[in-house]
Image (cartoon, rainbow over the protein chains, first blue to last red):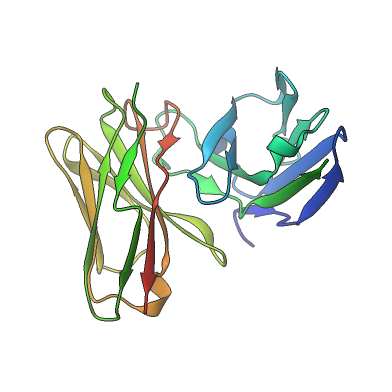
Length: 114
Length: 114
């Protein structure tokens, strides 16, 4: 079983739709959870960074973490064509742990159609 | 503030050759990590450097190596290139090492091995 599983899509939605992107993980040592957005031929850029279980909101984006289920989500409200990109979940261990590296999902390709 | 800068952005090599990629982190960032991104495997951690020392290493063969200079700039080298080394190589920096701080990525060096 891979440490992080993410549905690669592709996911195609109309403009204005609510988008839900998800990842599951198996390593209970993961404590920090991130979502990155990657446009074609660009490097990933950090969208959301969370630690605890629960929700974190930033504008049209909401990150949700459920550590008991080992499940994280990213919701995009009022999606725009400019949101079309690959979305990568990433996670790593807690402070003081030896697991410094980020472990990424394979990414979900999202297209928002005007 | 300038972001993470990687050079070259694109390069083509043939099997058996070697390649050196360069990364300049964000000013003030002392940790540099390298990742390989391929369609099949996604983003995979190569290694992390902090204060000119390798702090963490992923599961890649010894053909992949790196170093960091006193000004925090980093290089990675791949010797005896194989077709499977074709990938986007991403450099990322953050302020400190360990499991704290956000990771910022460059736009990558796209390597094609023929």
